[in-house]
Amino acid sequence: MFSRYKVCITVVKKTFNQELADAYTEGEPWKPEGCCHAFEIGHEWITDGHMPAGFSDAAWTDIQKYVMVLARGGNMDGCKRGVFVTCCTDGFRPVFYKLERIES
Image 1 (cartoon, rainbow, N blue to C red):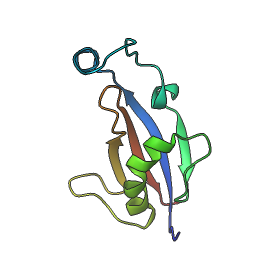
Image 2 (image 1 turned 90 degrees about the horizontal axis):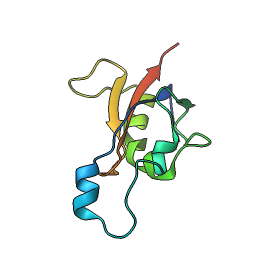
Image 3 (image 1 turned 45 degrees about the vertical axis):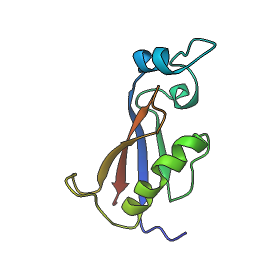
């Protein structure tokens, strides 16, 4: 996998949609814990394009394409150069990540 730059992944927000969990799940009550909620706000990883050790497989699947754009020198329309904010696709408890290209 060709990467020109490293990318810093930082947890910037954790949310929990209780109303959606109540409306669309059955059985045990859903709680914010689990999956990416094991990460704390401010938790950081540095990647060269490979999934960082200790990172969530599910979250990596969701954000990898954006990491690779930044790692290869690209930018996202409407965002600051070298930066993008994205989240995992867990609709009940999404976690938001800031991706930032390291250019030094």
